Length: 107
Image 1 (cartoon, rainbow, N blue to C red):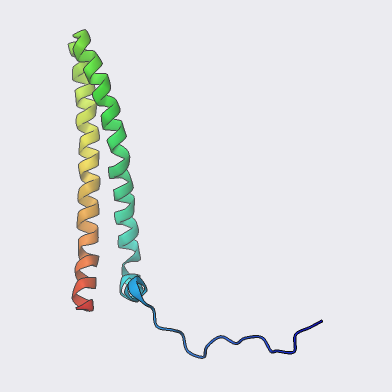
Image 2: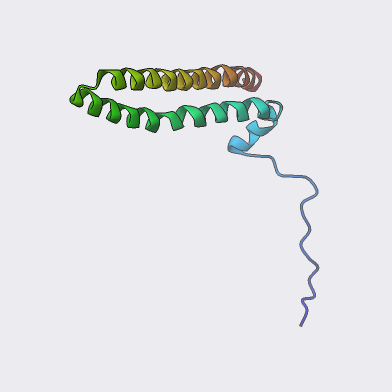
């Protein structure tokens, strides 16, 4: 049997956002920058296991005394480290502008 009550209607005006939801309108113009910063963060974070893995290989080569292979691995580690630091710079520099804008507008 059907209910005789009409369906509940949505409120005529939206409820104000609370907490972090109030920041979303201020962040909307900066979504591209935020996505760029998150991509840089993913690269920065993904490099740590690579560095640890290469450090283990370097230790084994050091114990074996294989200096030419150790030099090659060291150059590779330097390149990986450079990629990591470039990603960190991209993360810091890209998010700085959005953060500064949001903080100055909301105060």
